[in-house]
Length: 448
Ligand code: SF4
Ligand code: SF4
Image 1 (cartoon, rainbow, N blue to C red):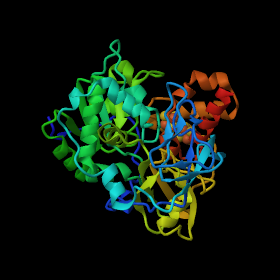
Image 2 (image 1 turned 30 degrees about the vertical axis):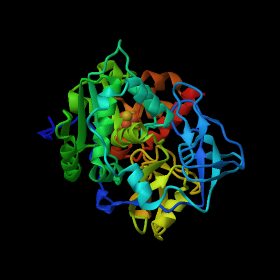
Image 3 (image 1 turned 90 degrees about the vertical axis):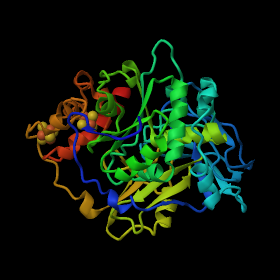
Image 4 (image 1 turned 180 degrees about the vertical axis):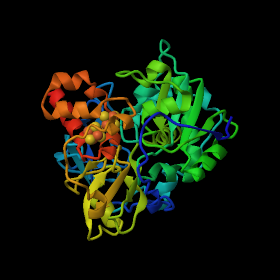
């Protein structure tokens, strides 16, 4: 079945923030000119960091491995341009993690840039037949060697989620095309411009995991993407479903409920209910890795927000700086006050624009004074709106209070670690209590 079903399913609770996608959704993907330098972080994913396998002053070509995974839950990293390495340094990513980086200065001649790069990543033919002849373990190994991680933002190493487990079979492979975070349009443009790469990747992932059924979920605010994916999926047995737009539908647990009615238990994984979820970008990167033998060296980043002069969807090398992308988009407007890595609901404020973008950077949102203006924090009025909005049925106000008081026991008893930091609670709080920041602080407290 390939037609988008008319029933508009969704999940319980959640919120409807202004979408603001109009700023960039009609802008075709543009290839960023090769920057003078990239800095490749050795930790761009959940799990263990990589170990550098190149030294300073070494010539590397785009796609050469520069950092090797040292654990099962890890992923290697690769050079994203042709050039020469320099001594490793350290940077602080927007999420606060200090990570070593390998600088690469660009060579005068680049083997892959401009239209050739676009074609190599997104264009050309993507086979849909004969893929079942590939050994499942070959697909999983290709994902590992290519350094593929979840490109929707979570950056979990994908080979772990692609591996077959006969004791815990996968019934549903869900392909996440929701892109529910406001402002961001990178996945939307990918679905419009390269839908065949997504379907090829989904067929490979189905074969690797042994899933019985593949469903692509796309919110109903993206009719063009639904049409493109339905067309590309014709004759493959992949189902495409239109979902009622709501935030955070792209979160794994919410997508599982919305698409197949399966609730993931608190503290559990989608795998526990026979489900695995991959983002459309991740799946397209898998297709490129298996079919073209290319590692994950580039990604699409939306540069958007009311504070940027010329929004865009850019195909960029991993490791390029935030500043380079902002400058390419005409710089910031005078009233810009905040740069966010990702979107406003789940993103982190970028303190230093020289920070490199990573595999998980789906967007850069530049907000203005007007966007961030809000009332000062007041006392909790016990309205319960945060509880009503939380898609995980947590009690955000209790968790945040416990975190603020440094009370680990109480915070844990209210399932602090189950919080996915979606921001719904803070979005609806009339007292402007920074619930998510407090919860993040609480997680750091628990880990210490
Ligand atoms: S408590 Fe966590 S999961 Fe629940 S709404 Fe707040 S940020 Fe989202
Ligand atoms: S939404 Fe804000 S004011 Fe209302 S109960 Fe939650 S924390 Fe308190």
